[in-house]
Picture (cartoon, rainbow, N blue to C red):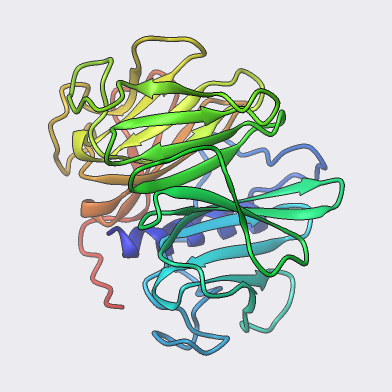
Length: 296
C-alpha cells in the first residue's frame, strides 16, 4: 500500500536535506516555495527487490535521524529495520532490528542510554521499542489494532494509529494512561470528529498538534490538543477522492514544517508527493504525478 510513495517520500526527504538545508542543530528550514530536482536518486534499495544489504522488499516506512544523517527504513517484506548512512558513498544497509513481524512505520529517538527505535507492528497490534544494543523490543502502550504508525514527542509520549479502531492513541510513560487524541474510537466516518482507516501521523513538538493521514477519507486532518474535531488541511473535507490539485487519493504519510505550517503528503493512489501551504485550498506536486510509471 503506497510503495511508490514511500520511495518518493525518501527522495523528498533527501532533497530537503541536501538542497534546502540551512545548517542548524535545531531544525531543517525549507522555503515554502522551494523547488526540487525531479530526477530522483536511489539512496536505499539500489539492488532492487531482495534481502541483501543493498536491497529492500516492500518497504512501508522511513525515518531520517538528522543528528547522525542516517536513513532508517521499515523493510516490511524482509521483517527487518535497515539503516543507511546518507553521508557515505556506499548504498549498503545495516540491519539494526531482525525478525520483526510486519513492521510499518518507525520513529528514532535519542535517550540517555542511546538511540531508541519505536516500531508500529500492524499484525501484532502494538508498538514496540528497541533500546540500543537490545536483541528484542518491549511493548509500549496498550493494544493498537492494526497498528499502522508511531510518533514520539519531546515528553516521550507515544502516539499510535489504529486502522481497525479508526483513531490515534497517545500513551503517557509517566502515568501509563492511554487517551484518544484524534478520531472516535471504534467509529468510522467522514465527519470532522471522525477518521476512516488512519495511517501516517506527525506531531508538532511545540504545540502538540496531531496531523493524520486520513487514508480512506482522502484527506489530512489536523487535531489541536483536547480538540473534539479535526480540521482538513489537505484534500477535501467531504472525504471525496480525486487526482486534481484540490484532492488526494488514499494518502499514507504526512510531514509538516513546524515553522511555516506547510504540509507534505504521500498521495498514494496518485503516485505523487503533494505540498499544501498554510490555509491553501489547492496543493502542488513536488515529486511524481501524472505520467509516473515505476515498477518495483
